Length: 224
Ligand SMILES: CCCCCCCCCC(=O)SCCNC(=O)CCNC(=O)[C@H](O)C(C)(C)COP(=O)(O)OP(=O)(O)OC[C@H]1O[C@@H](n2cnc3c(N)ncnc32)[C@H](O)[C@@H]1OP(=O)(O)O
Image 1: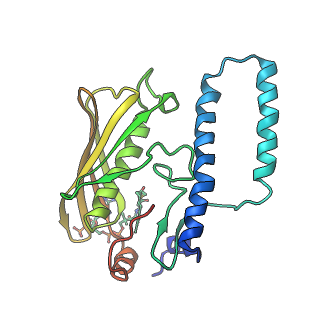
Image 2: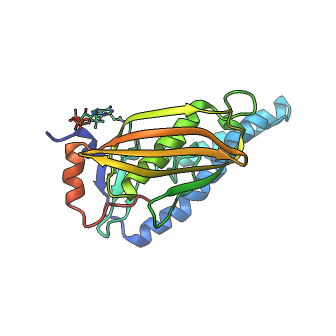
């Protein structure tokens, strides 16, 4: 059976230069919007200034809406095998709510990122929302599975919140534990400067369509 998710895997025929150009054009826009999200939370200017700022935002929206797409970004690739999931809610280059800027992969298969979570990711006062922690762990554990050669969809993500996670600087890391058939078991955690705040174990399952896709590539595609 063909899975409908495959319809959102599209070769859009861009050259590498065009992809680089898009990255240079839209990446900074995402950064600006990310700063605006935080400003909407933190600004203390008065109603007149808010009204004036909103007029500028309306003008910006009018420009950006002149040529736009509808629907999700999906996963796009080109003939040289560059994959983009720029809409991804955890790491997408064009997604202003995505908290992760980039990930590191060590030779031993460990995947990690150092991030700084600002006030827009708040749950309990001054601390990270538990759902945001789950978002981070889902992404990094999934990346650890993929980088180890076993990409899959999250089947189960078990999370233990060991202590409150403060907003600010955090390390998120994960590593493949074992593989059983189509299931990759991955462990990971989020830590602050004083130690582990959240632990997770994920089971990432390669659906049959993904195994078939995987077998058609010399290497597991690394999204950018
Ligand atoms: C190429 C790049 C791909 C990038 C992917 C990015 C993912 C990013 C991370 C995500 O956010 S994924 C989104 C959240 N996850 C989902 O939406 C997954 C929805 N669920 C599914 O699509 C299917 O249920 C799933 C692929 C997980 C499993 O369907 P299958 O039809 O392949 O499973 P099947 O019933 O054949 O069972 C295969 C094995 O997995 C086990 N299993 C099935 N569902 C499970 C589950 N949910 N948790 C744990 N184990 C599970 C099942 O018992 C069995 O074990 P055994 O082989 O030992 O018998």
